[in-house]
Image (cartoon, rainbow, N blue to C red; front, side):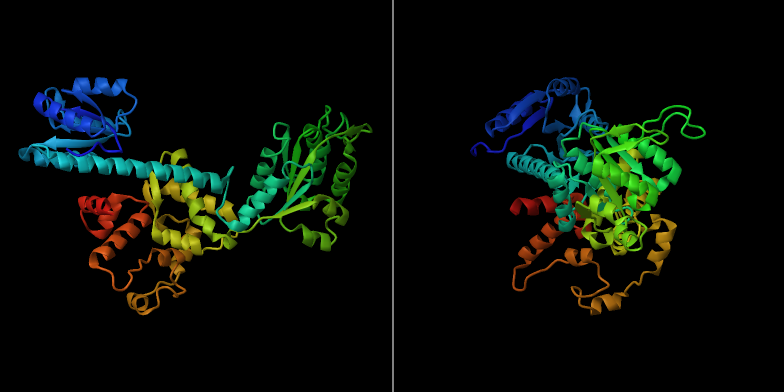
Length: 478
């Protein structure tokens, strides 16, 4: 026999034939695996209920109180999780074994069991589980790297902006966030507050453009009882409520010059009076303001220059989505996941054609618009892959007008330099170096296709029109 394997698994053998079960137990135990035994379904489920983790179940199809298919159905129903099943069967039951594969069995092996073949299948399962664990670790690291709260980005420029925001979060300096609508100004403000010493203090948000001048003034500074018709009681404004914490003034460029002068006083003196009152109220707050194009308003006299300078101590300019398109696939993946869970839709991805189109679009509404598009596509989908047919009507019209190259044009063009070929398509183009062997070329094609399919072996086998076992055999050789 061979030396015990360095990589081991927790294995449950389900076999009513004593000699077969004991033989498998001794072999797998020698190979270094932790092995449990059961001779029927009842004892199988009893063991599964008492042990936290079973990596692999090796089960005979025919059992005294049922079949191995019952175990597979329990896995499919969610009663058993994170377990792979190997079915053992006689030649006369191969058809049933194929049915077991359809139900989710990892593989089947005919009796008498070839121990070397079984060992190879177990190694593949362990390797596959290790790969999944590595991918989950990588996903966690990517989430940590690209997910700043709800502001998701892989763009170097955007990451630099977020890094700056975090760096200044520990200060009390006033921050002015500039950027087009939908670029994530409020999300960046959240990041600053959540990393600041005031994170456990009040964080008050005010959308200045949503309120009229009179209402905004009362909302910001509060009012005394009887200050105006309808002011039946004293009302504490947002500045007062934010005392000790932070106030976020969104679209500050839209407020009137009169209100601007009062905000300037708050910045300079940290004090104000309520509307209709004469009592000076002292406050300790940090102001974060946001605007789309405040400099233009300063140049036209619509916004006070002295207030602008007071607000613009730390300036953070967010980049529109059309200038950081590398974020689009990342955002789409996150939005599909969120809306799929929220609406109980089993959406698994997006078609290449739809992704290419969404990568080419300029998004005047920025991330907010992309989020709305994906929410719509998820809502109207029936699950699975969402494609271009599910685009909102205004985008579907643009998609239909997008020029498509004929086969002749595509074949006759330089694939790498063709301006009509998306970056995704260029990246998916597989290079085969001149002079290598046919086997090496085949390995490159399989490896690259696995990468493109996120290591989904079933999809890779379908794409390459080869058997799933061929994929596993090639991986073993790799």
